[in-house]
Image: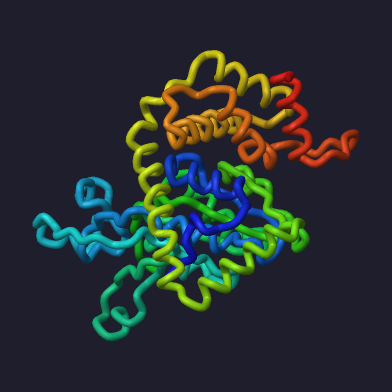
Length: 340
């Protein structure tokens, strides 16, 4: 039983980024960098647990939506055999771990050796990307991921499909997921190609004030002593967060992004020297999702300022003449754009 999302103490920026990604998966996922033991994996699993269960096709290894199964699922899906309308079932939103030592075959899928040896058939055995479809793919220590897996994830994240061409097998299947990575910056940097693919990047730190540290310890100890009772005590608060996410998804397309907001986003990114236009797009989408979560009908200065650090800090070039960190540079640019 995962730790309740609403019981997590502090780490407001991380929680905000995860809620934004849940409200609008097109944001591009979340990268969480920081100290060990600061609740990174706890928050990710807690978020997935509070999301409402989803409808999937019974017997489909790709968690396909019954409404689009015959148009978007792999032709070789066993649930499509016979052409009959497949049955549906309800399952929790999947959270799939991608371990550092995973082979490419385990990630993308490969030849089913058991069927090949026993029946002489060439059949596809789905991998981790199939299980993660319509859910979360979680990479702990993402900065230590092998280069060839990084390249593979970039291709799949961009296309939303996993294409497998090997050992006489040719198959493609849907693989749309919220990519969530975590890591400790002291153990190495993330490759720029993968870093830019994450929509939001947040930094978490160990609490420095005694009351917060005591509160974290108290809640964690209470959870370990009685998981069911502790979770039940936060059920109402978690239900409120769940309703916020569902409401945000329902109104997301109706939230207005004015010309003024677009201009402010472009001005901010230009002043920071971000490459390309992905920064502006992510900034606007994140601000719109936050507005929807807050029940606002139009993106305002408040939402833009709130999401700018997480949307832009990982997109800045290093400036040898400016020793300030990326977060400080974003905050400085915000003060110039929005003087008090």
